[in-house]
Image (cartoon, rainbow, N blue to C red; front, side, top):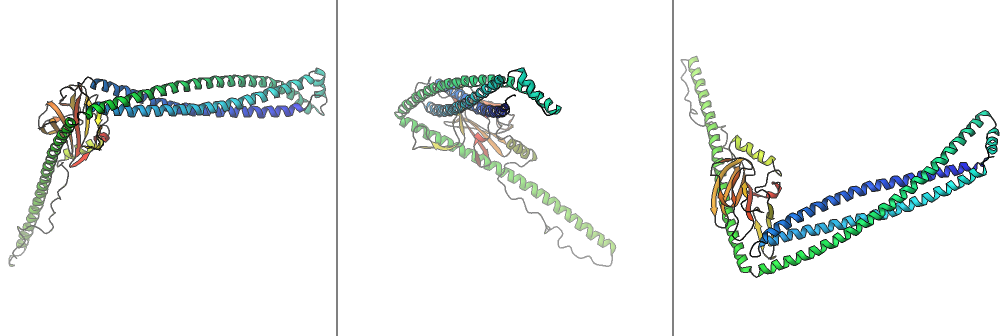
Length: 465
């Protein structure tokens, strides 16, 4: 008789195969998740590396100046911040690889244990088969059946068992290949971790060198403190004059719009008043025609303003008075975040609002807009269609072009020459003039502001740099 204990061994083998399949599924899911996280980190790292290269290129251009300047400090700060973010991203990627290595080690252990169980189970199957290898035993196993149906089932079982032995060998070989592949992957992950560690160490050395370079620049600027502070005061004075000029322009435009609205309201009210008087006269004439004997009553209210006249519109803070201007305001607002840069290939080196000076931390700088640096000879371009409201000249800011977009104003300062005039209609990206480059500097600098009536706006939320 064939040893029926092989039935139990077969069930154990099925369980072992199921466990192997679950382990493999878990490893595959883990790999997919890890690859997604790794892809995100590598994408972030590539972006940071690109930004560092661009900032470094800008910094190299500023080094052509004869003396250290504030732009170098700003660019060095930006470069240092990006370098620190890059080191942090590398640290996260190393941490992810560590987790991957641990999970791979666990998976290899479980798969190795399962492989051993499969081999042990297969040994028992081979031994059991060896004990019952004779054809006589197989025939006796079939002919000892109680009926034909049982004999058929036993014959079918022997065929299935033979096929199962073949599958068991296949499963063992596949598991062995998977274990070898995971071991290779583990070695690759360890090599990647080692490379990342070297990269991280190199970036830390670069960061240390950049901080030393920044401190040297700060020491150079500190020796020129009086000259720099005078330049800052002159710049603040120029910006104050610009703000006063813009506010005066806005107030004038608002007053003009309110007067136009009041005029329209008065015209409408006068028309309504005349219409009511005409109606009253027609009513009186009709009554006179109906009765000749009755003396008509004097119309005391004729010619006087009716009691239900509409009140004039309240003055508003908007500069738009026509349907065209209102539509332009709406179109400008709908393009928030998609407006083009006022300078091609520019980099923002001074942000909106109040912030500490790059060198003198006790000095606060208030910027009503943003400052954008670019190559010499760069052109200032309109960020949206509109009308040139004003062109003024301010010391330290040179020519200033103000464009009105309904209720909005875009302001382009520090132009050495302009190519438009007051009253011109301009289109999006149309050239307004050439940005000024200071003597001894290798970069031009545009000061840009954005207003909505009397309210200052942060251009960073509107422009797609």
